[in-house]
Image (cartoon, rainbow, N blue to C red):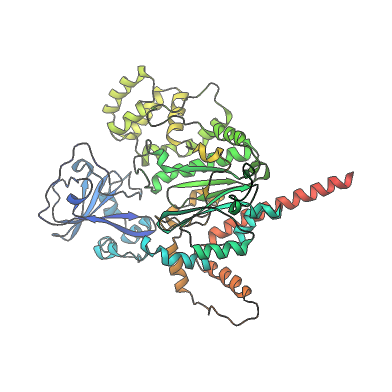
Length: 543
């Protein structure tokens, strides 16, 4: 929820108001009742006898009136507060128009809510009974019961070990890798290391970590770091990693803030991946880039090429600095300053941003919708043009008209600086430059959301939906729905049925797709390594 500048609380005839948040690919989540007791008071605009309020973007509110037993809408000018965030895209047409013109069956498909039957009426679709249903919701209280199942039956240990072993480049490569576990009650255990896959499995199933972080490959086993001679224990290798967090965009997104995300602002992550992936491949020549959803509000990139793993801290800093365009802290207003001519890499980034900017920033984020939002844009234009644009913006009738005014007034360089400030990737440079910096592991479970940190298929990036990423709850429910075989199968080799069963288990769940993406990434690396070994062998034969 977000507050306005002048908010008053209006009594509701002692009737509690239940507020729900509509979520993509999930049942609506109950926010709370009786808004007067919430953290921020809510202006009700005289709407009484109203049991459910849902905010659809910025155009209007739809609510269910208990007294009249009807769904109604109210125009934007009748309210000032977003009762809850919902990013289902109704920003170009009003909800009342949508209700009047869209068939009920299509509404169900449009909003992508589960369990919707063709022909089901809109009031029934979002009835209080349906909205209160929370079978697919994640409950953090269940995590201690679900994690043992996940680590025993679903975690892809085999693929994970293949990845971090890098084809057996050195036996010490996996053995000297640092793992860090965050246990229940935020108990933090660093410098874990394992000799092989079997040891890793047993320890993870024993400790049941709430979070897994991966560190560097050290000169000695991290588990023995206290017993080695002082000064000899140091980080030697580490993937070049990048961390992009949605909270770093809070000054330029209007739909959400802090840890919240929605499909509207997720476009920023799509843009970031496309820009950085191109830079890493074309400007630096890195071939093996694993993009991973963090499980909540960001993405990570693991650059796994051998030359990337051997980079010094200074070289990592240089790469991160090369990619940094948006610079300055919260007190810095203008964070992008372009040189003339524009660097070719930045020009390529602008091409990517141009593909999304109008739909994302002008329409969805609606950065020109009000004086409060367009002031942030005008703060980035030259002083001599600002006052005139301010007057013209007040006269303009729509966000699109204001955007066209800006395009006609500013030079290309100023326009591009605005686009970059609003959309260019914002890196946590400290994560990238430190060799011994820890980063959250793929296939770790996010304890706040329950979502799995899954690899992203960059070839189908625009189709990736963080809200459809499986949660540990949904995975365990999928397992429950399948016919389970007996755990204690009578065979001579005790390990074989366990391996086969685990492989069979993840294939029964929605974790199958992300693991396939992971396997394809590993297979590409292994194939490349075999090719390099053959080239070395051929060169040796020439001598």
